[in-house]
Length: 214
Image (cartoon, one colour):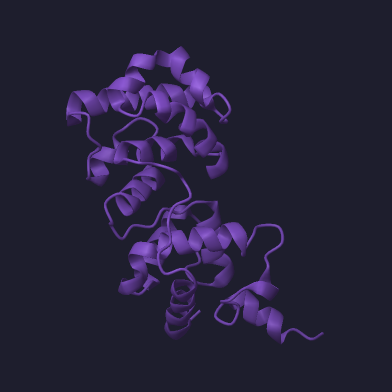
């Protein structure tokens, strides 16, 4: 995919969805951090079902701490790996209270120091909550970047750095959402919907399919 194709790729995604949003439900930066922390190896739908129950009774670090391990587990037990996630969330809440006055920090270094918060989670919070032009590479974005030829890479970090380099600046803040939604609903893992794809003409795989003999 060359520079002109990259520009058209994102222009089309922007035209179809001018204001993309995360599908995780949240009403504060802390709720977003919690939802993203719980979302590893889980669907947004499943996380939302659990956090609706959780946030109704506890949606601050202090309130989560007051639940304790057993109480928190009862609210998130429908999510995979809920025991370890509960432990990490409690540890994170303790650090937020002790080190950050109960607020979610805005720096990558401080975010990645929180238990259960890696680079991907920090990137989501920085992008969604604070409007930073970061790229959280999950399985969907990793697949789309490689399959389309947008930013091929063998590791999530390589793909992240490639995307940050290749995506035109005007699209960077929203690019994470466009790519994850495209991977989730169109450029799916097992059976990509190339016939219905609005950016097939810009995609390396889409162009190969169009030129293949019938």
